Amino acid sequence: MHTTNKTTPLAPRVIVSGGGTGGHIFPAISIANAVRERWPQADILFVGALGRMEMERVPAAGYRIIGLPVAGFDRKHMFRNVSVVWKLLKSMGQAKKIVKDFKPDIAVGVGGFASGPVLKAAAAAGVPTLLQEQNSYAGVTNRMLAQKALVICVAYEGMEQFFPKEKIVLTGNPCRQDLVSTQEKRNEGFRFFGLDPAKKTILMVGGSLGARTLNESMVAAFPRLAESDDVQVIWQCGRYYFKEMQQLQREGMIPVNVQLFDFISRMDYAYAVSDLVISRAGAGSISEFCLLQKAVILVPSPNVAEDHQTRNAEALVQHDAAVMVPDRQAVGRLFDEALTLVRNDGRLQALSRNIAALAQHDSAKRIVDEMEKMVIRS
Image 1 (spheres, rainbow, N blue to C red):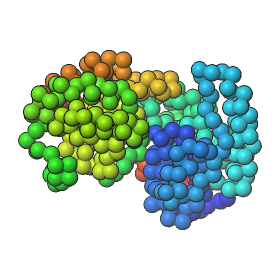
Image 2 (image 1 turned 30 degrees about the horizontal axis):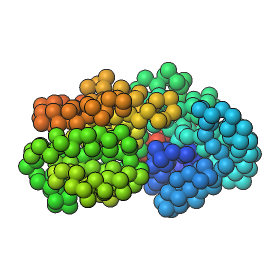
Image 3 (image 1 turned 30 degrees about the vertical axis):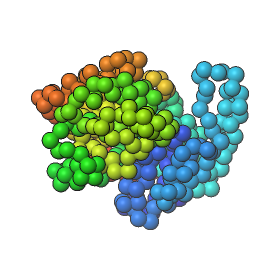
């Protein structure tokens, strides 16, 4: 295996693996950026899943990536898993070759099915491995890899139910560091969106592709919003639903105090102006809300493995740090809750204070601190 100076490794060789879903990609790139900041000469190789979004996002961030043919298990149609097993076996063979050829000093897994074969191959070759678990309910891949991992970086307390206690380090999830809100940024945001600073602002985001339930809840609330002169809404409906929602706009259905977007290019401005955020409960988004001290209503997606978004949301609700509305109740309940909450300054402040207390700062740097200790030990 490639060796480095044991006190100050100058150019470690690092494999970062994971993906298959968007929630894993940003933390992976954020960790790689922090590695490069610590060791500008570091050699970093990503390994992802062929055909998934990391194959575009990672090169766009300036890193090399190799794709494996691995795919996730289809829990609803078990007969389809014959090809999944074949792809897994093929991926494991390729992962062994990648580890043998690249000779990493350390391998980092961020979860998702792409990290399984690589981290397994790395551990078998004697390479120290670190896992990063974003959710409050650990994913299957990370649970399987935990036995061989040296360090497991987590974003929530109480993860001893999934991982050996002595391996756990609470670091939080790496987030975009440019999202810090200031009064200046808030003023710029009002100008950017053409909003009235005197009115309460609700931001509703369903991810870049959108969330059907959130959009249906918004459409159901049009009559109430049209009567709410003291409230304005920024609505990211997502690219999947934009044409459908644009048609409603052409028909004059969308109230004038609701701004429709398929995608918001300046999320920093959108967060800065918002008094209340409505969102799904992905781990990355929640970490951002904690850092930004945002009052938030979470509507967990029911379409994720092991219902982990509900568990993420419940972890905040237990600290009175968020309000949760179940997906099945959202169309009837969501905007009743939102309009009541956004007009209650005391409640907004309490939620903001409580979610801020859960924030983990400089997560990527803290993960790299753990990596440095591992490289020195190995």
